[in-house]
Structure formats: structure tokens, C-alpha cells
Length: 144
Image (cartoon, rainbow, N blue to C red):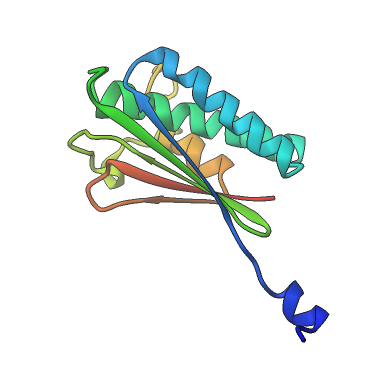
């Protein structure tokens, strides 16, 4: 017979997947998924806000910069909900980019620019932010 302690140490995860066409309206489906997961797993308001901000930014970057808004190309969004965290993975079909050579948005010469803050924001709001080597996939971790 299984003891209570053994049972408590078994951590299963839940997986969610979206395949979004590369058009701006796809963001609505993403937001519905974020809300569904946050409600089901009782995600705190501040973590929910950070997830919503980061995922909107990452998916918009994938649609606009990665897939060049070509609707035939898709953005794949995966969410893995574990015991105390959610790992989101966003992948586009683009060429990728060199995330190590982005200009510093906090540098004086960049403060007035309207773009170039997305990756900086992701790194500030997510608990962990990991790019694949090609630069067309990002993994965002949030503790819940």
C-alpha cells in the first residue's frame, strides 16, 4: 500500500498548447489561455500581471519580428504547469536573432526610443528567461 508521504512527493504537470497564426488578433487566444491557467491554479495577481505582460510581449515579438506577420507561419505557445511554477515556451518560425547583442534600453542614448525594451522587460518580470541558441524560442518561468 502506498504511504501518504510517497503520494505527496509525486508531482505531475499539466500541459497546454496553442498554435497561433501570425496575426495580431491571435493575442486574444493567448490572453484567454493565460486567464484560464491563472484561474485554475490560483495564480497571485502580481504574478498574473507579469505573465500577461511577458507573454504578450514575447508572442507579439514572435508574430511581428520572428514570423514577419506572415499568417501562414505559426507561433507555438506551450505552458507546463508544475507544482510551484509555470514554464511558458514561445517558438516562432523565423530566423531568430542574437539576443546577446541587443542595445541596452537603459543607456542614455536609448531612453527616448520607442522600441527595444521587450527583452529587457521579460528579463525583469519573469523569474527566469532562457533563449534557444538560434533566438527563435524563449522559455519564461514564473513561480506560483
